[in-house]
Length: 357
Image (tube, one colour):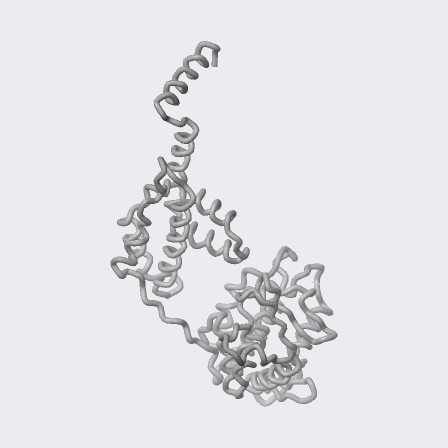
């Protein structure tokens, strides 16, 4: 820019300022009005204190379901666009599900992002988003009614399921599936377990509060079966800090879709990973575990009342029930439990295996 051009530009800016226009505010307004969905997503995640798993979920659902909207200014997202895409997503998925839960989750996330933009950004003193377009789904009652899943691994299928898991080539994947059934841990709680979380002396595992859903440490006593399983894994561990390491010891285990499909096919039991948690807690209830023990096993907060603070369920009391649940599963899986050794009946022959698989 030459000196004369700079002077002309300065005269233009001064003229605007004299008429009450703030050039900096105008630039901010232009920048805000051009804010894209992908940019807003990253701004939101940087501003909020969220778990890494939650951030990963937000990125995944927005970038997968609204891929063609990522570079679009958020002010250009209309109510019709929201309504049409929400309907389109409920036409079924390649996994055989309806897609309704995903559609609701996607647009609940988008609604939160746009609400944040309305509070955070302004143009001429007005919110950047005057009316959240996702609000149409509420006003027209278009949100889908999604019933909670209730699936479990049936007791009659437990032996077939276990034998199918045992046949997997990847031992760490097989151990991971079994751990979920015998502990009731959530998917990521099991995946993110590190050796530092296992105390072999105290015979406990701990889900750290930064990974637990209720933000509280979850200490779970190990039954004999689980102790043997984890001890075997520890004796044959790799340099990875994770109990279930990822490929080439990079991070933790992430991809086991093929193994999941194999177990479903061989056992003729179409289960989901969260079914393992429901199976564990259903077995605990069937074995008449007390209410407060069930809450501790599930790592759920107990409803506040005057009695709650006085009842403390010790780890050793939990251990008794963990052992009962483990033995119950071992029997269903065709094992004869005797002094920490299980015998798996296979036709007329019997195969002796450690209770740690």
